[in-house]
Length: 475
Image (cartoon, rainbow, N blue to C red; front, side):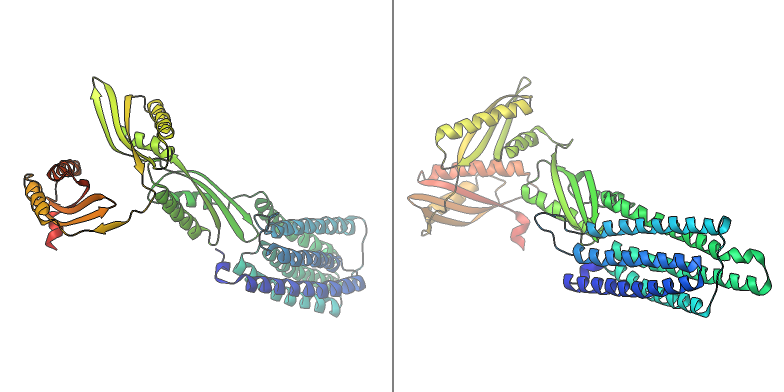
């Protein structure tokens, strides 16, 4: 995997440009030397190598241009960045390599069957090819190191060019040596060793071109890296809350990946939970494709375990409202729903009623089992009220605690606080109950106790009871 995430953008650009510039300088020197020696010796092997190196020079120049452009940040016209320039650069280099092959093969066939050329191997020829191998090894290693460090396809293609030059130059040296040996020992077939060596060079170039072509075409056509899509699907499926992975699309631009996922989530989860899950999914993808740009699209899905209460809440949530205190009664197979709904306190009654009417109609349409709905409309607070704590009313507190003892499941009542908000009296308290008491029973007890407290003092406007398990008071 690429390691570029551990380096600054400035450091990456400087190192990539430096190694690309050195490649251009090396290609110029090698090409000139091969052309001079090839013309003086008449060796097709050296001339084919000169042409090969000349095209390498063009490729190195294209690579230098591409790394300069590809590292530019995204802009309004290129919203995925300029990384595709590297892939296009590698594609052009592939075409140049194939042109090299066509010329080499054509010239070799001519010399083998139609037009014999006398080769004059010289010390200079061997020296130049040996020097070329040394330079090619040095440049190949330098390019490959930076290419792997920053996951650059353009630099990787350039490194591949120089590596093939090493093999092809070695073959040319072998061809010249065989021609020289043929003269020395009067072996006739060795006189054609040079064009045969050139054909071998062409074979190497074709092989390299084919591999490079597949890589560049895949990148230009946004082919996903082999096996990565399945790996992402398997990893994302393990994220808690993800019901299914609908779509995974991956594209590459230069050394940067872009991943686009669509995941199914329970339609009952909150927006905050949905955001949390999408962040976990994005992190999971980043573990597989470091430094990738990940977009996760959550899609609401109904789950098989939904009951009718969940379906009612799902309809409300899709309308950007919340319902609570839902009660459903079964009248001979016909379901009657009662619910509480909070709406903006600044709405007028007609506006609020119209919203509720539309919501009830949609609930009946999407949950056909419902025969009728009655909605209690509440105002949703939007202002912070000024409260003032008042002195404890010990007589009322004593009566409240006595009333609590009328309920066997209420073990204790404490922390009774009185407040006044405007001209209204508020009271809050904590009630201890058995740990194993069902929440439905707890809610029923609090409702009954609230009614009982208001009976003790009609001035009480709001009563808030906080239930606590009995073990909580033992700590």
